Image (cartoon, rainbow, N blue to C red; front, side, top):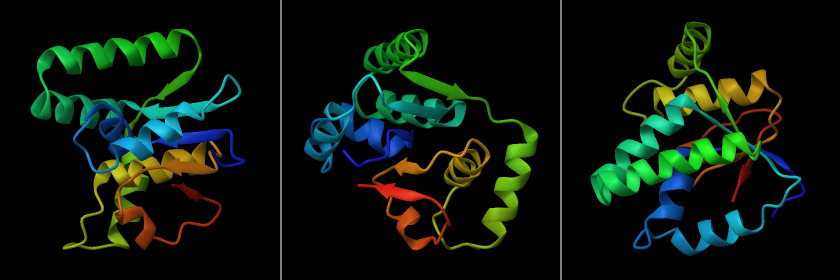
Length: 144
């Protein structure tokens, strides 16, 4: 992994990890397996929504429900911190989206990821979403 032991994990990383036919599956497995007990991982309620919706669509409701239970288990073990997304976060995310007008595919969830990383001083964003590479966000490292 990177030297960063604190990271926010985007839905694209979770989806790649869970869908063996995904083009980033092997990379996701490798990166996730490099995490250890010192790794402090964050997601948001929006990431849960995106991930579960996509896994349900690609794989099945059963797989989506199992992944949701895994998120809960990781949270209870304190291996994963699930951040809320309130109106203040959404309003800041909308201001960020204004800087990247359509047809850019940068989404509201993507913008909330950035805002949450800034708010909680999370230095690394783990995502296979190429939209993040187009942005120049100070003090944020992208993984991979």
